[in-house]
Image 1: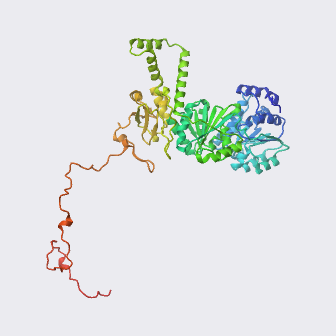
Image 2: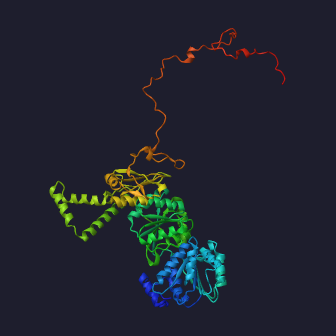
Image 3: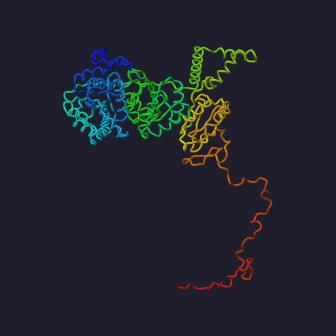
Length: 622
């Protein structure tokens, strides 16, 4: 295939070409240029390529072109290993088919109500995209008819093998009538996948794309040497320094993803987690928010991000290094999609350098070191953003009233016009936006402790309390959103945020304290009064009960009052001049016999009359 290949030269129909033009597709990728003509010609195909190469369009475009839109019968099946990938393929097909009349593409997968899928299948779907388990379920129920299926696609076949779907795949292929066309795509070709290809594909065309470097041709790969406790601080400064449309951050565990998203929310970032414990509807909501620009950051696990395809993702951050090299390729493949550029950052602790060398050896690319962000960098960035904001406002014009106010204040003295303008800018944007640059680097935290957040130590803070907590379902994003919207301040001014079971603490600049409290006086969260006040001013009934995790401690202002009375220093002290007991007592004289006639000072007991004298002699046998 020529390097100058275009979508028009591949034999695609005019409606599909028009859809591709509207979507911004300029030229086919290598796998598209080699796959589309073979599938349009009706040949079976084996495509061996890594994720992020454009293989979805490679099989979806010819599949759509070969549909008979006069019939409502199911004519094509696409098998995917995960729900996320099924949704991605379905969404892509809907986008490509915008100029085709009446194309019905239905995703079916576990975790979604099956009865709704059954109704859609009864109405008719030209293409069914689904996971093997749910497709078999529909076959057993008799709601999926394969009689008219003429094309089958196995997407990421090696992943279906890893997930234990190989028997379901075999059954599906055996039930689809012949003649049919089969396309198999897989990053690797293990023996079970090769056997499936041998049994079910007829004289297939082979398209193989080398994995070396293809995972990141337009992705800048870089790494940072950081201590574990330093990661959050470095990440926060990176997010503030670099321009990004959307950021995908990877963590190894579900708890780690949820925890990091909450901490980023507490620092003013619009972040959401995505992990395996979330319901499918919740994951779909997160993806919709990311595409709509309502959130900027998704913190995900490898399983949850499988098949996630959002073009807005410009940055991928490996907060935790992956367990294997292929997972790294899948991770960074979430950015740099469809010919776009992307940035992938890898956080490396000292013990993980060997794993990074393995990644470099596998991908055939060198991961370059990057400069550690510093407070000075952040300050310079804030000033640049602030200047750009002012420039845009100046270009908008209509400033006559404000010029008049500034001029009058300068004329009244004692400040000149520049000082008045500076005061107005600080009032509008906050002191944080124009913080003076500091040459000091990010301080390394103490071992085994999380780095303390950098929240402009030079400005006094006020700590406020809210009468809602975890039991009410409040999140850091709710706290930031309510205060920022009601009080009209920047979200970056708010934090850190500490959410307990029944109470929430939040810090804001001291200069904004009274204004924020006044504006949120009647605020409610889910019908419950927020009761925002200065922390420490609440009554004893407002204080949260201690019920934390083992090892937790009270804060000084939350510790319960001690019941014991303090030591009374006014009380008469011990008299050291008194003679000690041992100096007044007489020692026992062993030579002096015991005087039986001596009277004891012990008072007489009524039981004395029952006492008998000790009888000498041997004891009686029992």
